[in-house]
Amino acid sequence: MKILITGGAGYIGSHAAFKACELGYDVVIIDNLFRGYQECVDTLSAHFPNKITFYKADLRDKKSLQEVFTKEKIDSVMHFAALLSVNESMQIPYLYFENNTYGTLNLLETLREFNVRNIVFSSTCATYAPPVHAAEKDFSIAEDNPQASDSVYGESKFLMEKEVIWFGKIYNINYTILRYFNVCGCNPDAIIGYSTRPSMALMQNAVRGALNIEPFKFTYSQMDTPDGSPIRDYVNVLDLVDAHFLALDKMMKENKSDIFNVGTGNGTSVKEVVDKVVEITGKKFDTAMGEARKGEATALYSNTDKITRELGWKPTRSIEDSINSLVKWFMARPDGWKE
Ligand SMILES: NC(=O)c1ccc[n+]([C@@H]2O[C@H](COP(=O)([O-])OP(=O)(O)OC[C@H]3O[C@@H](n4cnc5c(N)ncnc54)[C@H](O)[C@@H]3O)[C@@H](O)[C@H]2O)c1
Image 1 (tube, protein in one colour):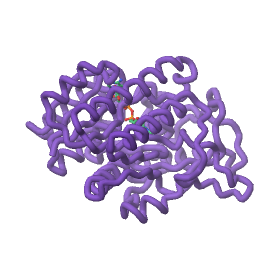
Image 2 (cartoon, protein in one colour):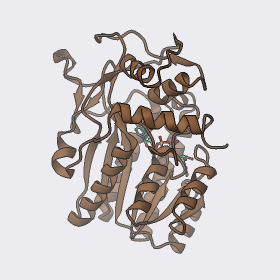
Image 3 (cartoon, protein in one colour):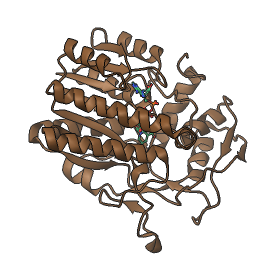
Image 4 (cartoon, protein in one colour):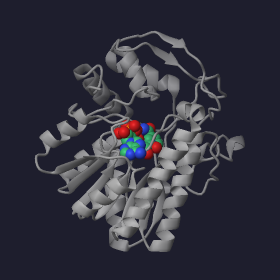
C-alpha cells in the first residue's frame, strides 16, 4: 500500500510518515518546504531506508501533482499541508485562502483524475463557533457544534472541509475529516520533533522557555476560568497520528466518509500546562505577559464520544509524556531542524 502524505516535512505530517513506515506502508511525501524541512525528510529516509519518496512540490502547482501521481501508484492520501498561523492569516488573508483552499482543490482534482478514492484530511477545532452551552459551563465541543470561525485560518480550513465533502459526494471519494484540538509532544526518542516557526504552540514554547532557548510569554487576556487563563485540550501527536490510521482502515473497509474530533476530552488551563513544564523540568522560568491574542475563546475542549465509539480511539499519552518528549527533543536540537 502506498500512501501520499502532503505536508510530510512538517510537524504532524512527519510523525504520520514515521508511523506509516512502521506500519509497512510505502510513503510518498509532497511538501514545498515553505514551513517544512529537508533535514526532517532526510532523517525519516535514513531511519526507514527505501520506504520514503520525497517530492519538493507545491499543491498549488497542478502539473507537479499530476507528475507525482503519474510516477507513483497512490492508494490513499493524508492531507496535512496547510498554513496555520491564526495571526499571520489575519495579516495576509490572500496567502491563507490561496494556499490552503486552492492547494486542496488541486489535490482533490488530481485524486479524481487518478481515481484515488481515500483521503484523511487534517481539520481543526478552529472551524467551530465558540461552544453554545457556555451558560452551563460545559464547553465541550461535539462534531455537530455549529461551525463559524473568527479567523481567516479557521475559515480557510472550513472551506477546505467543504471542498473535501463536495468532491467526496460527487466523485465517490471516501473522506475522513479529523478536527484536531491542540497538538503537542513529539517522537519520544527525539528522532523527529517540532520545528514550526514562528511557534504559537503553548507547551512547545513553555518547554523552550524552561530550557532557556527562547523567552516565554503568556499571550492570553484574563478569562472567566478558575485561574484566569484559557482552557484548552492538549492531544499528543502520536495519539493523533494513531487516530489517522484507525480512520483510514475503517474508511477503506466500510467505504464510508465521516468526521471526528480528535482531542482528549479534558480541559487544561494555560497556567496548568506551564506549571507542569516547571515541575517536570525543575526550572522556574520567567513568564511575563506578552501581547494578548485577539478573539480567544474561554475554553475549548473536545467531546470525544464519537471517535471512541466509532474508531475505538482513546488517547494513551499524558501531558507529562508530551512534555517529556519535547524536553528530550529540544535538548537534542534547541533550534529544531536546520533551515
Ligand atoms: N499543530 C496543531 O496544533 C494543529 C491543530 C489543528 C489542525 N492542524 C492542522 O494540521 C496540519 C499540519 O499542521 P502542522 O502543525 O504539522 O504544521 P507544519 O507547518 O509543521 O506543517 C505543514 C506542512 O505543509 C507544508 N505546506 C504548506 N502549504 C503547502 C503547499 N501549498 N504545498 C506543499 N506543501 C505545503 C509546509 O511546508 C509544512 O511542511 C495543518 O493542516 C493544520 O491546519 C494543526
